[in-house]
Amino acid sequence: MRRWIRNLFRIARIPVLGAAVPSLAGAALFLCSCGGGGETFPAAASSAAVPEYVFTYAENQTPDYPTTRGAYRFAELLEEKSGGRMKVLVYPSAELGEEISVAEQVQFGGIDFARFSLSTLTRYNDMANVLLMPYIYEDSDHMWRVLKGDPGKEVTDAFSGSGLVPLSWYDAGARSFYTKTPIRSPEDIRGMLIRVQEVELMEDMVRKLGAEPVPFSYADVYSALQTGKADGAENNFSSYEAMHHYEVAKYFVEDEHMRAPELQIISEVTMSKLSEADQQLIRECAEASAEYERMLWKEHEAEAREKVISMGSEIITLTPEEKGAFRDAVAPLYEEYCGGYMDLIRRIQEERKQ
Ligand code: GCU
Image 1: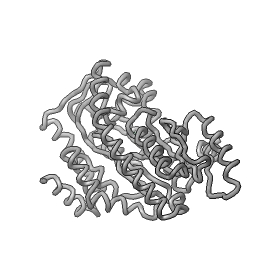
Image 2 (image 1 turned 60 degrees about the vertical axis):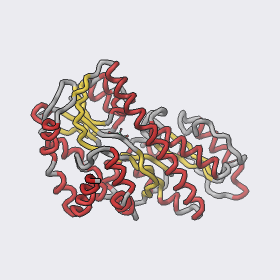
Image 3 (image 1 turned 90 degrees about the horizontal axis):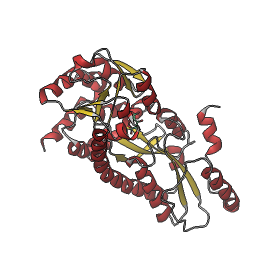
Image 4 (image 1 turned 90 degrees about the vertical axis):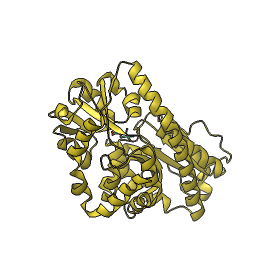
């Protein structure tokens, strides 16, 4: 059975059902807790005997990863602040499917909440490509000024009508390449099979470097590297460590080609069923969870870097000139993907000078 159909059976959602709520709610909570995931963690003490809403939340990272911990924090806050009326069952480790199928399910309301890599969402909003342009940010602070300022808002507003409603930005550091043999330049990576997300921009970025993109889902990266279906991949330190990719692709070159922030999303179908006050509460808890995630991120990223080094990974640090060779090779992507948004690009670049 297709995964999303399975999920429909698995996801027990409880609308406002008046007198029918108590028995259905009990059954639903029982069903969900049998799936392995769907925990609110740490086990939040429910202050109301029966929740009015039980929501599902999809996350493709491991339970102790910063974004997943952000999701647990969100669940905890929402349950507490709604006096137990709203409960969120978080499913980590892609239990509800990988990002592309999850996004489709969120669109029709089969899943209520999810956290996505922004690149996955470019298929719903091509303005989002602007925030993903290689080397557009000077550093993390520059990216956060942009996300929290007008450009970030313009991009989230442009999701209107997509069925996906952005709630808050999560951090995901910078993405770099990691490979089975060392690389320092586009010449070195030429001809290699590089795993990318199933996203056009990511495929084209790798093509610009002369490598061959192999797009598939996050969960399959380890085995692809192990079996030679891919010679390398690209991601941040935290993912490289959490998914054990360092065991099968030892060389991590800090080219930092892209900062791909993550978005916490609620289904528009779900949002439209809630009162204004509940919508506001959800927004506040989402923002608080994002602040928590951003704090965890910095620490986790630094620890992941240390851990992979201690496990035998070799970190290749590039000189500004060497980094410049990567930057020049991918520069045409700006015109190709953001030709219609050059003013926005310019405003983002101007933020650098502050
Ligand atoms: C990051 C992101 C994941 C995404 C992954 C990928 O790790 O957090 O949600 O799936 O990149 O490369 O596919």
